[in-house]
Image (cartoon, rainbow, N blue to C red; front, side, top):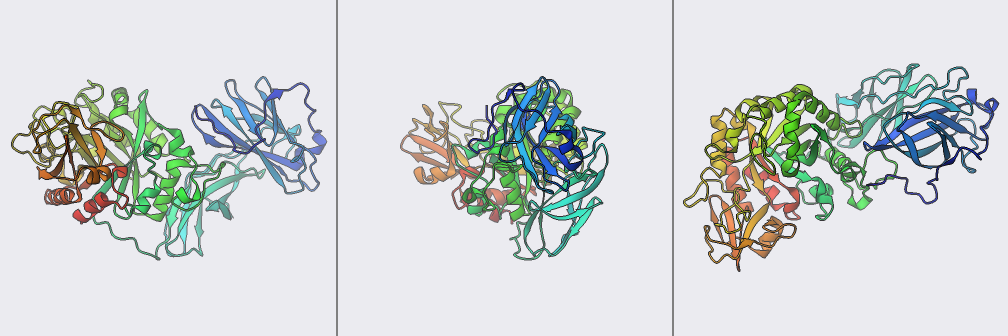
Amino acid sequence: MRFRHRAAAGLATLLLPLAGMVGLATPAQAAASATATYAKTQDWGSGFEGKWTVKNTGTTTLSSWAVEWDFPSGTSVTSAWDADVTSSGTHWTARNKSWNGTLAPGASVSFGFNGSGTGSPANCKLNGGSCDGGTTEPGDSAPSAPGTPTASDITNTSVKLSWSAATDDKGVKNYDVLRDGGKVATVTGTSYTDTGLTAGTDYSYSVQARDTADQTGPVSGARAVRTTGGTTEPPTGDKVKLGYFVEWGVYGRNYHVKNLVTSGSASKITHINYAFGNVKNGQCTVDDTYAAYDKAYTADQSVSGTADTWDQPLRGNFNQLRQLKAKYPHIKVLYSFGGWTYSGGFGQAAQNAAAFAKSCKAVVEDPRWADVFDGIDIDWEYPNACGLTCDTSGPAAFRNLVQALRAEFGKDYLVTAAITGDGSSGGKIDAADYGGAAQYLDWYNVMTYDYFGAFDKDGPTAPHSPLTSYPGIPQAGFNSADAIAKLKAKGVPSAKLLLGIGFYGRGWTGVTQSAPGGSATGAAPGTYEAGIEDYKVLKNSCPATGAIAGTAYAHCGTNWWSYDTPSTIAGKMTWARNQGLGGAFFWEFSGDTGNGELVTAIDSGLR
């Protein structure tokens, strides 16, 4: 289990019994002179982080404070800081520390806690009176979060922001508009035009509601904005150039979003698929929450050059992707769900496609990162066929699933799918209605790789990503050209097909024959998995010795590898252009060299 806590020594407080603590401050010291506001600052499903802010709204100094509230059964405080928190059943009380009880007029203080469960506070009291500064109606709730702002009318020096209204039990008075975390305006409506900005500069906007008691609610999701003018980004052409960024790459591979900048790849791609979200109980879920939105980055690791703080609303890969989009506004990011490991949940999801689609949109539009994602990608391996497990949901299940996703997400989001490249007769492309599903999708990522490899340990050796067939190919239809032709024959428009490229090789050991078709004894050694190795390693450890069917192979000692090089990628991109394809995609960024050789080849080849 990952623990979320404030990283400051001495602040976490053990929860003590209510008995033996000092009494509440007297109501005379309180009700009409101070407010207490609650906000949930983080939520990780089974638990959350909450924050209370006490503000002296009176004209005399407040010498102490105590906030009381009720949690529903099943919700509780597990640790706290900057206050002594106690409980009696479901009733909770937080009292000031010895050093933060005195509040001058207009001053405020905050304390926080980690909690378990999903409930929200109710029946708030401050020093025995109302938390909104009144004396007759305790329990005034803070406003809800407004909707994430949208940006329009962007110029060199201004931007118009609009947002959906917050709600409050006693009414919303106005909204604070925050630019890069600092307040720039307070307005009564739900729109604001920010002026005096700098051309070609990145900004982040969010909004916070304020009620009639001057309580502020949680901050909305952030909207990244780049003003026009300034340095012009290099054009990327009209073809899709999409790369997968893997969530787990931040660990052993030590590959982070900033690597897209330092390698030069960010300026040469158009889209990123963030992989993978999981599919559990028929619903989309975030998989590794720590890597996704909790991992803290230092200034030198961060795209923006700014270090994460312990209490910022969003960290991890999602925040780094937000910073990347601010720096490269042309990039669109899709959240990809499934993959080889997590595809087992799609069969259940297809049984209630509408509910599945609704759960996916809730993840993509979570207010903490609503500005990060521009769409969703489904990687079901494989509908009505076998991958890690076998699916028997029927040929219509995939079409029904993506139809529900399009209905839920609407026309303003990208909805795409990664699909099999099996072009054999009666193979995986024939198992599902990919032709009928295409009308609901922006494009298909056709996985035209992994055709052959050391999963057949004895061989014969064969290129794992052949562009075309060739004499002696071990399986008819296992090549890019046959897969693309079959999808076109099923009615999928050429422009909705992206050619897949692997940034890695597959290899065997115990091989004596240099040409394809040799026998083997098993998988060649690999850094992370036997039989697989990154291009950035293979280009030096086992340089290409030949080419076949539009891809390269290499025989080094007793090892035999196949992989794409900048030269073979150039040939594949020419073929993709001639076929009228929508572009290309690749798996995945960390297999490329530090200067992005393969991304450069895709970019150049599709121009």
